[in-house]
Length: 388
Image (cartoon, helix red, strand yellow):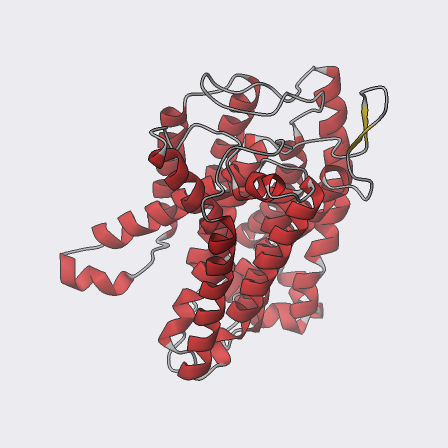
């Protein structure tokens, strides 16, 4: 079953490459290019690069996911399962995920469309946030995906666990939307996180193959997009003032909202604590895997609030921009953030198999990574760097 799941990565990649090429071609022909943003937003000068990459990511993910969900819903996988015993063994459990899968696709479609509209005509932050929270609530309600359900018995129902889960999904979705500020950053960090979540879902004592399969599709779609968004040849300025290399397409909100929402939702769907096989601290896995994106989200919000600005209006004070301000090139800054995300993710994968004292070391390791970053940045938060 693991091999079947992993085969979804090249499947999504094979769909994602032509889908991204198509999105790039249409973006250029329709003049759907990087824009200046909303009033008050501070961005680097727009580049003549289409920001339609989210279309490629969405298609590479949604087409096979919809096909799989419909096949499960209509019972079309029985014949295939007869020749694949590994699939047949898990088919009853997978079939139960058809309904939640359709609900998830519906929420992703709503966010994708809203993101595409925002990419063409920048929407105010509050309406966009309300749509995000509404989609989060719909996903939680219609799939019964909740965090901290043990609280229900103490507060008179599921309202608190629903609220916490909606808040979590909203924060993570925004975190990846915030990360979309340099070539390859949001997609690359999301790919690293998806790889670690996939490992946890597939290698846990009771593997969750539907979640793992969706994560494999997301990983393949992101890798396909990165071929064009984070190419081998970095962006550089020529003597005549023109530029060469760098991203030939951006994901835009049509991609970042989908990617962040999907990672957040799937982190809720994974059962990290599988008593008696897994200890309670396995529930901290999402926080550790997503530690670096959440650090960027929390730190940039804190900086904006400290400066008397709205935390929802973009600027050039993200973690990536601050690293560039400290002397790194944009590409080096992105690679550093990849590495930091991988360091925390490695610890998270091992967490369910560790003794309590070993798990404490993983927690300390994660905190030390964030503390090292914070100390390095202390009193050095002035706007710097170039977006994208």
